[in-house]
Amino acid sequence: MRSQFATSSLLSVLGAIECALAASLSDVPTVNDFIRRNGASATVIGDYVYFDGGEVAQLVDGELQKEAGFYDSSPVNSTISIDISKSWTNSDVVLNTIARPWASKSNQVIWTDKGEGSFYVWGGKWVRGANMTTNELWKFTTDGNGSGSWSLEEPENPALFNGLEQYEHSAYVSTADTGYSIGGLASGWTRKYRGSNQVVPGMVTFNMETKIWQNGTTAFSPFDTVVAAAAHYVPTFGTNGLVMVFGGLAMTITEVADTAGWANSPPYNFRNLTFFDPATKESYWQIASGTIPPSPRTQHCLAGFKNNDGGYEILLFGGYNHRDKFVYDDAYILSLPGFVWTKIPQTTAGGRRYHACVAVGNRQVLTIGGIRTGWDDPDPAPQGLLLFDMTDLEWKNSFDANAATYERARDIKNWYNNGSLDTVEWSSPTVQHLFVVANSTTDSGSSSSPDANSPDTEDGPSSTPAGVIAGGVIGGIAGLALIAVAAWLFMRRRRKGDRVPTSSDDGHHHGEVAQLGSRSETSPPGYMFKPQYSPIELNTQRSHAELSGTTSYTNTLLTPTGPVHMEHVQPTPVELDASTVRY
Ligand SMILES: *[C@@H]1O[C@H](CO)[C@@H](O)[C@H](O)[C@H]1NC(C)=O
Ligand SMILES: *[C@@H]1O[C@H](CO)[C@@H](O)[C@H](O)[C@H]1NC(C)=O
Ligand SMILES: *[C@@H]1O[C@H](CO)[C@@H](O)[C@H](O)[C@H]1NC(C)=O
Ligand SMILES: *[C@@H]1O[C@H](CO)[C@@H](O)[C@H](O)[C@H]1NC(C)=O
Ligand SMILES: *[C@@H]1O[C@H](CO)[C@@H](O)[C@H](O)[C@H]1NC(C)=O
Ligand SMILES: *[C@@H]1O[C@H](CO)[C@@H](O)[C@H](O)[C@H]1NC(C)=O
Ligand SMILES: *[C@@H]1O[C@H](CO)[C@@H](O)[C@H](O)[C@H]1NC(C)=O
Image (cartoon, rainbow, N blue to C red):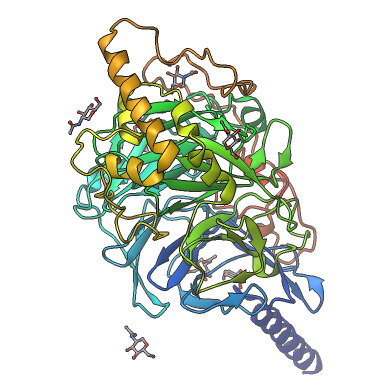
């Protein structure tokens, strides 16, 4: 009797403690309890920023959380929205939570259908390898009030869809109607029972209107393989806009992308930039000038802005150098059509990777989360949110809902005003046409379209022809420069057999030394699948999940892939169902 009573009261006390602990963990900790957030994917629809997925670390009673007595971070179980119709600071911002029906993932692909007011998430890494499912595409339909609902989106071609690899670390982007996922890496964290890592070549697309999936091979993608790059859709240039891909690593197709693979794979640099026409898949390159962001760089973020002159600027922030093992705290702006990089002031809130960036409020970048060293390293940015003003080139702690229209920063303006566009050595006349010379001359001189200042990065292609862009970009001196460029182009075309335009003969604006380990120029022989399955002994130590009733936990990652993701992030044990079970 007595012992029964003792047992039941002990159980109820334990139950109460468990409840209290569970209740105290939140997807949106208070500003005082917040430590770090990472791995979320973000988009903007109407008056709201939405972000989904990832993990959060927080204080519980003044100490770093220990979920289930062990974990320093928790999977985020809600989708979160932020109202951007009102101004706020990162200390008083309201984070709305919206229920989400599947187990948490980090680093999901996010594709936005602005026209329909919805977005999709796909792929990514299952946090702790818990409750992994087969391939699923989830769709969020917004309600216009910062909330909305999730549903599973059935593919129109299920056979192809069901055969697709589940993976993370792709460069993803959406145009008005299609989502793209370029390159990537599959592992035991992304698909249940996957025994080894595998680089995913080529590019997958999802047409948000027809619901048709495609898996293009390298003929369809400008990259043989690319891992952990970032992509951006520039609606302003070309007939269909252009998709630009920045950074990442060229891992070999058969490589088991272990830590050495991350450290040693040749990086894509930020000098020779690659982009493609999303409709035709035609790809191009162009050498950029200015202060080139260092590489290797992975897990960085991008946000883009149309300016009133018909040009476009892209912010690049942070990321990781897997070769030299440090987190980047630097940021740059690439200005188009000039292909000139400008280094901007560093934030005092420190470097980060696995963060998300979105363009908000005319001319501001909102960066969400990101990790530097580990979960016990409090983010100097309250709530992990930072803002950057693209015109003033200032990092801020507040969002201004009434910020003025975006204009290029002074130094970037100067670059155009003093005729520097004229000094760009285009990689080909086709690329030059895409960016500065109109095929038709009828529009030149008219002003740019009224919505050109919209920070909307997912618009359909601009109806503004290149002539207008060029005309708007530059007046006065630079206008003359354009005429000179056109004349130069005309003369060059007449002198067939001239030197190849790519040869760099002008040290003064191409003075940058090419990045170390720039991309490999060798094209691999088709697809060859020889995954190097290094047999891995099943660790006889049991994972945390199995250790119920004991207090001895193991930090050993049981999957062959764990360390790839977890280096510099405190390792967490893996549930047994992740990929430790081999068959
Ligand atoms: C999310 O759900 C998981 C599983 O129920 C739980 O362990 C975790 O604590 C939750 N995350 C947060 C931040 O509460
Ligand atoms: C996994 O599924 C179980 C059973 O449906 C559920 O209780 C648990 O909360 C889920 N875990 C996560 C992380 O969603
Ligand atoms: C949004 O909120 C407003 C004001 O609270 C309300 O009138 C409207 O019905 C809401 N719309 C939706 C779709 O929930
Ligand atoms: C697309 O096809 C290639 C070649 O068959 C394959 O290696 C790759 O894994 C596929 N991509 C996905 C995401 O399944
Ligand atoms: C830039 O990269 C492309 C491959 O995407 C290559 O064909 C071209 O030669 C490179 N240009 C220079 C100047 O290195
Ligand atoms: C034009 O302005 C840019 C940016 O201020 C500067 O770097 C460049 O040297 C200038 N070029 C000329 C020709 O004055
Ligand atoms: C515009 O010029 C480019 C480069 O010469 C050419 O490839 C393209 O077909 C032209 N487009 C039109 C619509 O004439």
